[in-house]
Length: 182
Image (tube, rainbow, N blue to C red; front, side, top):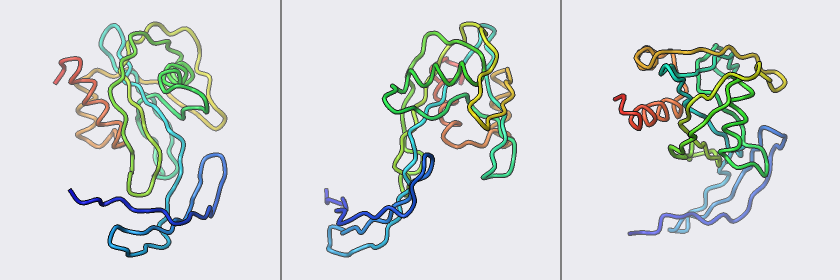
């Protein structure tokens, strides 16, 4: 097979803060062509968890997402902190956003949410809800409702575009496959 890898000649950071880093790369293709600038957005890695209760309800969260100007329904999860393992972040985020502890955490997969321009990874897990031990403990600027939804209703919500986070939809299907629900 042909080598299709590009060589990064130089990188220049255009903007940097805690949540958003943009850089402009100068890249050389295998045939010698130069692409300049090639913009790369650096985002933190994150995780999401398909959490299942003892009565087979899926624990979902409902929150406003400004970029799409709507309230969305999603899997609990969030950013993986520096020096934190993805599975640690998964348990922490579920507890913070829902108040549930989890057990039987099972890795589903990791993926690149948008490999054309983003450099981060998303990690997805399946877990059983242990028990609701605490009230939600939000990060600043979070305001989240917790939903317990039947598995058939979740699939209907995906079909009706009520669950719109693309990479999370894949995790829901992967979890349902593991559970024998498809």
